[in-house]
Picture 1 (cartoon, rainbow, N blue to C red):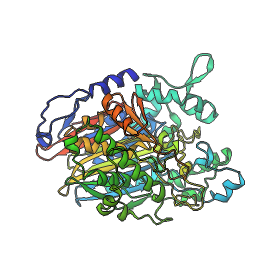
Picture 2: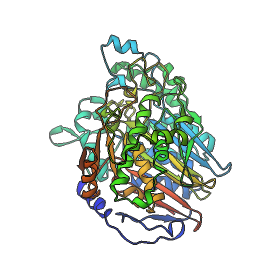
Picture 3: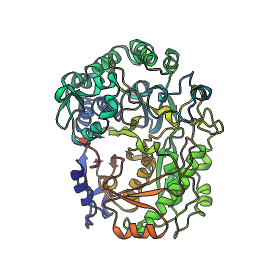
Picture 4: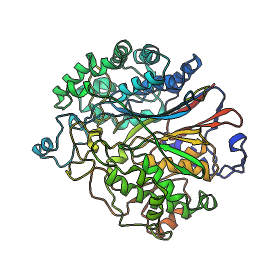
Length: 573
């Protein structure tokens, strides 16, 4: 697996004088990617498992729209990449509706249980909410998110959309290379819990449980039956019916705090996406409790600089990127929280005026070291992203996650899915904006994105990987807009990740943090970053897979990308 990724990342270092047609006709591609751009006329589905992408494409071919395809693909991913996502986790989406010519944002994230109080954790003598186990649970929001999307925009029933995943759950689905590696890494943790092991591990030599291997068929009949209950009973089967009863019983068995009332009172929320302009493009993200506005803050800080002139192999560009990230994440740590419980000054934070003042702190010759930095939790997230554009140019940008791999590490054996550990991102400091409160939604790392141009959808995309996501969004956009890369190369080109920023848990930082530079970043760039005061670690591959679809209005086609850090594919017709 690592060798294959290294080959593709190495290819990204090659400079070629390629000229592309249509919307990318006049912009030379700075890096050659390891895969070709997927070009299609009627629709594209892109996600991190090829079979899941194909399931969504089948929905489009049968007349379903982008939302229908996104739900079917999301359900398939819950089965096929269960460490990263599933109906035990949350979901966020941005939708472009071709009929109303508007963008819509959906927060399908769950809240802390009503009995989860800071006093409870104080009695337990806990300084932080545990990373794993039942006390890290918040209410899963995914199924209600599917329902909200389907009711507002969908044209197909749950029975039709979940049918393919039910069949694969019963008959088995082959495990691809990267996902097999994720599974192997979680083997020990899953083995520690009998219920989780029975769902996600298979029998090995001598009766020892092990992770399914590359090419092996994985079956999850329990999840198939759970999906069947949702297909027949809708979202209420999950939040008020048989599934809810089993979840509450499992919570009692494991010492969790989720109650029937917590599940019954859950609802998703439609929100207005927020934007900034970047070189004539409107870049849209969702407002807090997610971290999407960090992307907008970073872009505002970078826009005054001529990045196109600097180029993607310039140490000046990478230095500016890291410094902008530090400033945005310092604000993230202080302000980002559930806006129903805390005042979040979104308009001020994403304004050009604020960026102008903050930009005065950027020293082009020296790394900032006094910016608060922090906690490793955010860097551990496992997430899936998917995007769909249909023949009418309805667009869906959807991201879904358990947070850590297999979430809390606990899965009800009779339901077949892991329960997320998003509650671990609450702070127990009573003075922190993101402090734990009953019924409050935690700070969230997963962020979908979309770009419009002249009031029309232009680019729908996302990057996975916890703390990496805003950094990845900005690098993809700079690659596409400033450096003229294709939709494929923009996500596959070498990346850096800055770690050690202040986090919404309120934990102390470690100064200026560290820069993780992928193999494709030139040696002279690394040396210059070190000279300017950055601590740089060489890594083979940073986290954060990517999918994106670019709407080429000039040629009337779609261009899709799904890069080599994941197993995924962009498929179209």
